[in-house]
Amino acid sequence: MRVRARSDVPFDQDASGRFLPVIIALMVYVASLALVGAMVLSESISRWSGDLSANITVQIAPVPGDGDDAAVERALEVLRSVEGVARVRVLSVTELRGLLEPWIGSGGHLENLPLPRLIDVTLEPGKRIDLDRLAESLAAAAPEVSLDDHSLWLDSLLRLGRSIRLVAAAVVLFIGAAAVAVVVFTTRAGLAVHRDAIEIMHVIGARDSYVADQFQRHTLMLGLRGGAIGLGLALATLLGLQQLARDVEVPLMGALGLAPATWVVLVVLPLAAGLVATLTARVTVLRTLTRLP
Amino acid sequence: MVRFRNVGIRYGAGPEILHGLSFRLEAGSFHFLTGPSGAGKTSLLKLMYLAHPPASGHIEIFGRRVAGLSRDELAALRRRIGVIFQDFRLLNHLSALDNVALPLRVAGASRDRISRHVAELLDWVGVSQDVDARPSTLSDGEKQRVAVARAVISRPDLLLADEPTGNVDAVQGLRLMHLFEQLNKIGATVVVATHDEDMIRRFDYPVLRLREGGLAIEPALRKSA
Figure 1 (cartoon, rainbow over the protein chains, first blue to last red):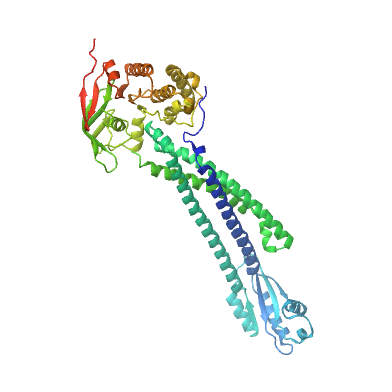
Figure 2 (cartoon, rainbow over the protein chains, first blue to last red; figure 1 turned 90 degrees about the vertical axis):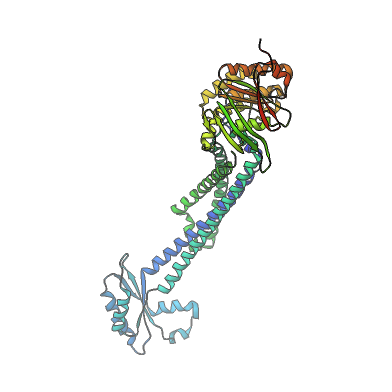
């Protein structure tokens, strides 16, 4: 004679067991893609911004005669005297023409075009330079010299990164709110369907927490099942996208190699879905049971 | 054990179907509860097993005034009350064994203790061969015995039975009454609700009689020898 370890509430007789995992799977799938997408783009943006902030460009406007070379020399002198500058490199005219070619084409007209001279300045990692002061020193040395620290481009990039993170957070928040609403609905439906069993448990002295435990365990299993399905679908989609990115050689997608933080998000998301579903079910049951005497 | 003072009951916004109920059941007593159909026997039992709040008056169970108790305290009181329903109210997805074990599981008893007690009790009520059967496959008499086993498994201090003989034949009904007597002898306070006056006359117990929303306590209908 053996007492079986099964639920006192006949959950296998109601439809929520089939409905809830499908909904949770879809939610985890969408949330996973939103979060991983945001993380990959954020990572790429921070890599680009890191590259950009480690470099500045000094530009010398074209001056008739040999004025350019003299201005370049004066600018180099100033730059080499600044602490924190790791390397300076003057771009050759051939390199400058190479940069312009994709935009205005090759041909004799490029040789006649007055081109500014560019000095690529690499900063020592972690060193901070007073760019305003440097700009002043360069201007004092040669009025035709100007400094581009890429701040306009960097600001736009960082703004884009922030926006992407906000959108992803909003998507996850909406999905979380929808998940809570769905679990509340299914739990209430379950309480109505199993009213007889719950009343019997109540009459024989079950605490509200005992009944809530039953719903909580059931919802946890459904939530985790749905979360695992959603995770599986998300992984399959990400691997597909990664393959696609490799095929078309998109450098942006390089980060889809799933960094450790991305893995953590992917694993935590279905667990979080299960946890949210469980807690929601518990709170819903406890609040509903207060209507019983 | 059980004390009612001017208690009334109503459902929703309806009128009080029972009112001014005042009585006291001593520990270890045995009472019949009777009255015509619709007199409110089940409603009075609901008040006693704390499944419905009184609309007026005060109820004391096991020396504790029910009003103002926390939900966990009320649950603890309910665990000391065994209830046998007229329609058995067994959980159909559970076996007879698991139905009987339910009050012990709810009380947090260990698996060993549950197995030992349930086996003993199912044997006592005579359904030891049907332990794995679902209620839907049992006869009314067998369901009744499983329901009785569930009500008494946790050795309740107060046993309430709602028309327990209504769905079984006369012989089974008498057997059941003798079972309640045995439980009463080992200390349980018993209230049996029935409209069967013949049954009441066979036993030497006082009667709580509901009539026109009120309650009267009558001595045993059978003359003691």
